[in-house]
Image 1 (cartoon, rainbow, N blue to C red):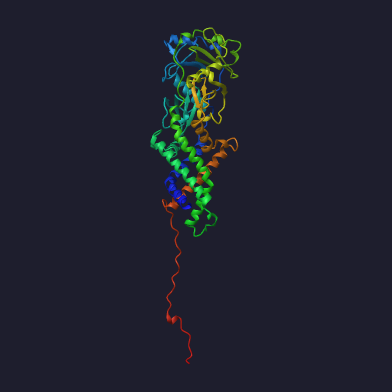
Image 2 (image 1 turned 120 degrees about the vertical axis):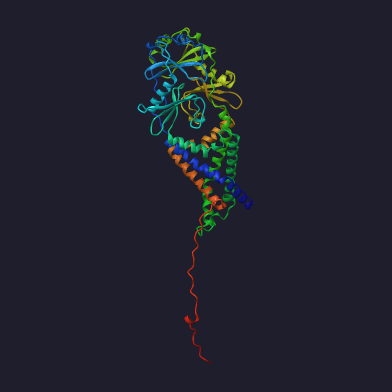
Length: 502
């Protein structure tokens, strides 16, 4: 029995060891990528108070003058100190920007706003801009992990080639990258995610899942052979600095990292299997349906002059509720109100009902199935930093598999969707068993990264020793000591003793 387990471990290890080495070496780069990641000065510009005197025309008057008959939404944004009406008018096209004082259109307003966001958040006001590109899909540099689309890539003429990806709809930064990050990301993608087989292809997923399963089997069989069945582990002589000593070190270090190797291989294989389905439903869809702008007949002056809100209005959004437009106003204290643009009257309950309308559209479930709604202003174990958007509203449903949706009420998009079962379980295992994020609150991110790097180094060393023992890698043989030649014995040199004759 012991021999069969040993043979199984030996051959499975021979097949998977090279993949383990590649994963370990590339995984070692992940903390390095985090440490060298450029940090912005701000993730979003500071909120500015809307002044009533800057509004000479209502949104409806502006759009009617421009001949725009329907829109998907809009909001007030600031470029420097100047407010502009940002309009989402046609899906896939850049946003339009209008001066609310006189209704004039800002030429190339989307690009100018993107450059303003990039300079403000990065804190770069000197270097010239060498390139501005609008991205409507993910590519090799801007990967799907960033979630936000469309974005602008703003490249500065600096020695580090700094590029800032900004989301003009959310008025925020998506990510930063420089030349070092691009090189590290390319290396990590090729050797850890195996993107050389094609992103999202069945071949890539099959290879990752198959070799992750083999690695799991190697770790389990090694634990059985060397931990449960190997009674001579402590009695193996360490002699000759050769294969016996190598075997001993391989067994001891392998036992030390076997459990972590099982966790890494299981969570990594599950992540590779689940990720294509998750990418296919990446939350970039919009729920808004174009509506005629004739419903916008009231200037926001009436709202902004309202004594209840005028001292602290920082955000004004145009949202659609039950087939009509509403002004969604956010105060300095983050309180949210909705007003009827025709009468300027407060619409009670509309601010709370709007996220429910969005969730209903995305889930297809009746509002009567909603258990609770809650405002989420921080990332947590389920809704992590990878989802990017904050604040969002979590809508909890009472239905099969306990579905819960996170919707962004500002942009009207689905930020994330979770339910009990495969996807939720995969998210749990990947964040805790593969990335060890549970240690962040206990030891801090730096200590967590160091512990992971030490563990990964141990796994790489075990895999390398296994390759040597199997014969895939050859160690230089130690030179055998050569004995000094013994001079020949001559008779004259060794006289026989005299014997007395009898």
